Amino acid sequence: MAVAVSPVVGAGLPRTVGASLRVPVLTGERVEYANLDHAAGAPCLEQVRDAVDELLPWYASVHRGAGFASQVSTRVHEQAREAVRRFLGARDSDSVVFTRNTTDALNLLARALPRRTAVVLFDTEHHAALLPWRGPHVRRLRTPGDPAAAVLELDRALREAPVGPRLVVVTGASNVTGEVWPVAEVVRVARRRGARVVLDAAQLAPHRPIDLRALDVDYAVLSGHKLYAPFGAGALVGRSDWLRAAEPYLVGGGATARVTDRGGRLGVSWSNGPERHEAGTPNVVGAHALATACDVLARHWAQTLEHERVLLARLRDGLRSVPGVAELSLFGAGHDRVGVVGFTVGAQDVGYLAAALSAEHGIGVRDGAFCAHVAVQRLAGGPALRASIGLGTTEEHVDRFVEALRRLVTEGSRFEYELREGRWAPVDDVRPLPPFLR
Image 1 (tube, rainbow, N blue to C red):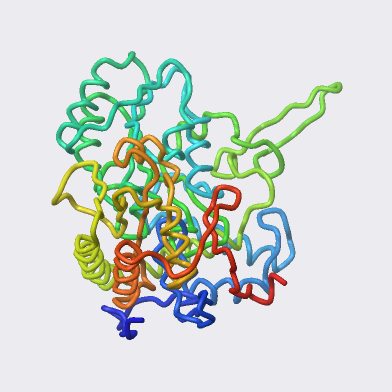
Image 2: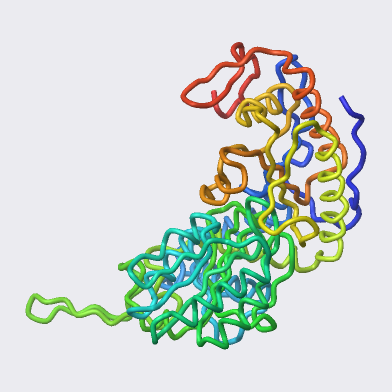
C-alpha cells in the first residue's frame, strides 16, 4: 500500500466530513477511503454540517408561522435564495426556485415552457437534461467531434426551428468525460436566433465559478448533493416570466395565494413568486445547506482550482501508464476538463474492476453508463469506468487507485468474485458493516 501524503493543496481547502474515513478491505485491514466518485455525489463539507447543526434547534415550517422559530426558519430560507443567486452571478430579477436536484429542476422548467416552444439539445446529455423535453418541437442533435462543429450544428437547427419561443439545453461539463462545453459560444448563437439557454451546471458548479450575467444564460440548474451539501436540495435559477406564467409544477399549500369555494367550485389564485413552484413544506434544512456550500466554495475558488488542476493531471498521467486504458472524449485531446475522467480498460469487465478496487483497496469509483447511456455507448461501446476528484481527494488516493488498477489488469485480483443480481461481489465478503446498519 502506498504511503499516505498530505493533500496537494491542503492549506486553505475546505474540509469534508469523512475525509479520514477508514473502510474495511478483504484482508481484514482498514484503509483510508479513496473517494474517486465525486461526480455522483460529493461528501458534506464540515462547514455545511456545522451550519445544519446550528439551524436544527430553530427548525420550523416556513412562511406560514407566527412563532419565533418559524420566523427564523423563514429568514434562513429566503436568505438561502440570495446565496444561490450570488454563487451563480444571477440577475436581481431572476427567480431562485428550490427543487430536489438538477433532474427535478429541469423537469420543472420543461413543464413551464410556453406552448409550442422549440427545444434544441445534444444527444449526449445526462438523462436529467435529455429526457424531460417531449413533443414534436424537440430536436436532438448528434454531438459532433469538436466544439466548433457543435456550435455550427446548433446554429443550423435554430435557423430551421419553427417561429416562436425557443430553448437551447446545454451542459456545463460532461459527467462522462469532464469536458467543458462552449457555453459562451452556444449563448451567442442562441441570442442571434432568438432562443433562450438553460445551463445544466450539475457537474460544472462544483469545479468552476459560474457567472450567469456575464454568460447571458437565461436559466441554470444544479444539485446540492454534487456541491458538498447532500441534504436533498437543488435549484432552478433564471428568468421569471415563463415561471410566473406557467401552471404550478406541483399544486398544494404554499403555491397558492388564495383558494375560494364558489357554489362547490374551487377558485385558485397562484403565488407569483418562486413559491408558485414550491408546493408543500419547503426543505429549509436542504436550502440552508446548499446556501452554505455556495458561500464556502465561492471563498475558495483559487485553492480549489489549483487542487483540481494538479490532481487531474496526476490522474490522467497515471491512467496512461495502465495497459489497455482508453480515456473517453467527446471533443478530442487538449480540450478543457473538470476533474472527471471516463475510460475503458481493453476487454476488462468494468463492473468487476470497480468491485475489486473497492473490496481489495478501499477505492470508490463508478462503473456503468453514468445516466448518459447514449454518450457512453457511442464513446465506449458499452459500460465504462469513471474516476472523479474533489476537495477531499489526495495524491495518495490517486496514486493508490492507479497502482491498484494496474495490478488488477496485469496480475488479476487476489480474491474470488461472483455476479449477484447483476453486480460483482466477493464470494466471501468478510467486511463488517458499520454499526448503524446492524
